[in-house]
Image 1 (cartoon, rainbow, N blue to C red):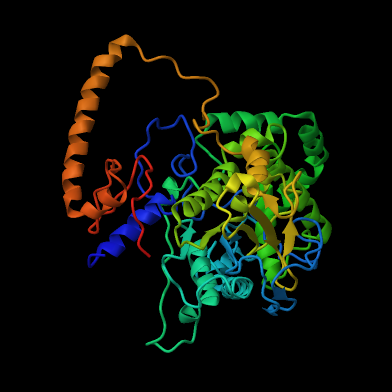
Image 2: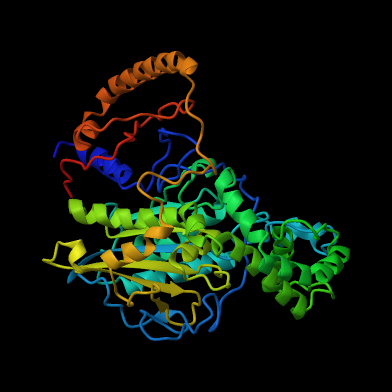
Length: 514
């Protein structure tokens, strides 16, 4: 290998896995969704997360079943237990934990909030920011992952083995860093300065993240599906039953709630639960029964986003995109013999909820802070054929640090589900190969009068691409590693100081040298 070529190959390799793609040129903007490309503009940081609640889990939390079932690699109380044997060196595999950030400050206040004048004192880092408790939760989750994969991962971080992707929010980026500090000793707090090593966390701007952020606000088809759910008789009946409750809550909070999106009621619950978790007194009207009712209203809203009717089609536009990417990453790693062992996603409860919906595992409970949904792929060495049943995928869910993780089963499949069967069962919830139309009806055909201007535009695009290919002379190994893949960058985003090759068509690299 030539000096410096390894970094360039690794850069192209990570781009190929679709794990950290930044500016990708869209072939048909606004019309399709795919695992690595499309999605709507996302609200700015601090705008909150649909359905994000603050329950901390417990023996009956999140999936509504006990998390004390044996089968994990963590001892109750947070200490290391028996190491899990799922992904040992006797099998070729890939682990993909998707986790929610740790404990945070409330996202917002309400007009009559008795603590609103003390926000800067109570939450010195700001609303929506990770707290010290959140850091501790992620450190503990990282140590759990180290215990579970002790015999699978290298003892120290190796960039070719582990890739970490986060949404572009302070709380998820910090959560990923804290998690890695628990997972790898060289990143742990308290290390001597000479021995401490930070571990990279990758992200893309919020408005360009099409993989971990939901719902799709600019997708008309998604809003049609959501409107169908909220206009259903069952939804309307439940909503009518809470009209008097919401009316009284308006008087207590100073918010307009009746006839408004249920997200407003959830924001009240989020603020109250955050304050309660940090030992602040709640207003007299915020009784346990009020909190319980607000949680039920929130569950109704979440169910409309991820559940029936047309749950599979909604999943294709949300959680199915991430599910499809997780499956595609494993296939590429196995097909190309890449050394990647773990892909970690630091995200939000809305991400986990959408993923649970795509898997048919959502049951009305919201993932607590630091909840982790893990995908574990295993292939017996010497059995290269995925379709022959030699590759299995297992799921676990950790929603309580005091107990063992809960093994999950995809409906219709055993716990260690053959990958072919898993693909078959989840196919309706994943985007089809041609992409999912975001608009409810096909767009009209292009008028003949516009053909000439379009051709002129195509000529201009070819000229820009020619310039880009000339710039790639600085990075010949990228083209060589990609087997001649075309590259482009999004207009308005000048190339960074260290030029990245970003393929618009994914070709396997000719050679990956570990």
